[in-house]
Length: 332
Ligand code: UDP
Image 1 (tube, rainbow, N blue to C red):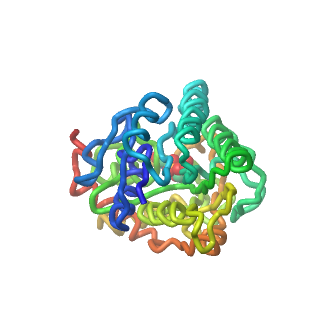
Image 2 (spheres, rainbow, N blue to C red):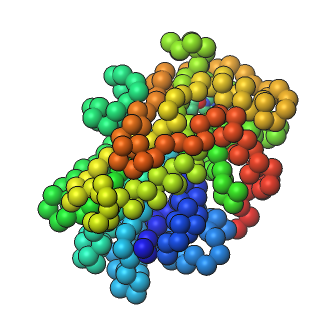
Image 3 (cartoon, rainbow, N blue to C red):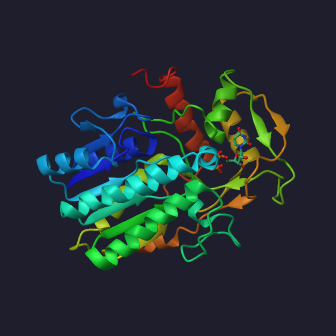
């Protein structure tokens, strides 16, 4: 199938593009390169530079190159930024997202996979989190993702848009070609590895949580497992698919099957780099729930998906290998 990938030059998008190409699909990328990297795209993948929220660009693109399905990865995705500038998140993730859906509707595109987030759940009442848990986002990022998921539900009922929204927590690791480069970087694993390289100081945020070792537990998902889930979800939106999603909008959690504490991630990284990593212990970071772990059972039942890279040492090792091979990140 021919797939349009928005945000295909970003971290999650680019590894998903790799998976789609490897599976023999024809891939077209739409990315404004505001945070993506041209170099992240494999050779032969066409890039249209622009925003998914620009109806003229998307309309022209689809008129020139009709597509069978869309993988929508592009979005603003920083929690802190969403709190300080919610207008940006509503403008891009919601208004831009709905403008995009409108052009897809006009062009007759009826299959979409949405790269959503477990931030739609907010602070869960219980873990592991199932898809039928209450959606109560605690920041504009999660709220705007939930709002877009809501649009997908109503578009399914009224216009027959078949969609899958994938909800996941902490994406980590790298493929051989692509890895994580964010500026500023807030995520644990890149911060730990930057400390190992002597590039930045590492603070562990809070050691008094109600967890076995006092630090927060998170569900770290290897980016290649996520990419494979995107591929399987796209295939499941086919009207002829064995399980299919009918004319509906499905939400599916993704996760590693368990969680790892901050101390466990740090220990894994010390194993990978082969030396102690300097760190300090600091205050809790605002808004961090003690434990976030997904119940990924539905992904197994419907997509036949299960995380393959479940070992935290392996996940961190892939991130480290990529950093060693790309000490300056993406140059372009
Ligand atoms: N964390 C930390 N130091 C850092 C970055 C993160 O202790 O420099 C902790 C953070 O408080 C959370 C966990 O690591 O408990 C994962 O944070 P991250 O920002 O990677 O992902 P989040 O869970 O916020 O999506």
